[in-house]
Length: 297
Image (tube, rainbow, N blue to C red; front, side):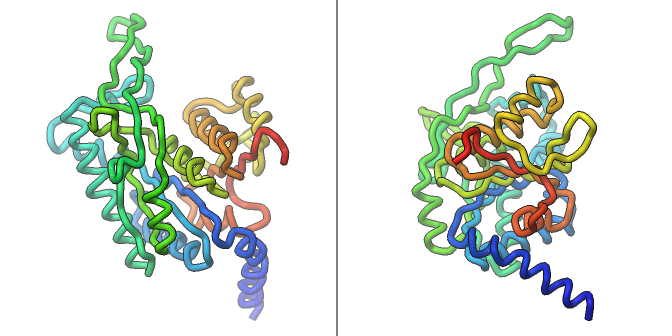
């Protein structure tokens, strides 16, 4: 009986959040270990369906780096990275489109549909809703240790998101599942960063939340303690002091740009934890790090 009472208490704790976010839009970047562990994949799909059934409009933007690496290896194309970004020639771009826009996207759609959701897969190419330009050459070191500029090929910086198609799908009660592929001015596909794509889509939709799922607990202080909440000014300070470093910097910068562009809050959560998405949104304490606007409102 005590366990049943505890379950009822959890529902009571969630009620104010369900009321607050009813008919609001959440954009969730789905990636990391949660995309490869079978139990976590099914759990994520079920959580997304639950959000939709309580009236929250969910958009999923996914990555797929490990799956791309695996397919490149199968077809005999070497994976090359520079400044942490995948060098994407025409052959590699074909694989990226096949994996992200095909296998990965359709699997996520299928998982959500199996749990009772109505999901539709698309990429930025559909209705040309995500436009980008080729990224400028990036500095890197060659084999001799010399500083050089590297052309990343078909890697894009997003210039514009036209959210009409996603809005139409949301209005018809669908869950859009977006592969991070954009079009350039010549109509060619470009590989774009999934975190960045999620942030730009969230801003274009005026989303209440951007949730970035990753493989760490969240943002930590210099003693390794999880920061539950973070003002944007404090985040900038921690980056400047080197407390926030490595791969967390681009995620935090993505979150900062999103909240500065009108998204109410951004969250960085550990996708390795079951139900991390629900626990972050529907509990008072949360399980990750929330990042708020630069200015109080």
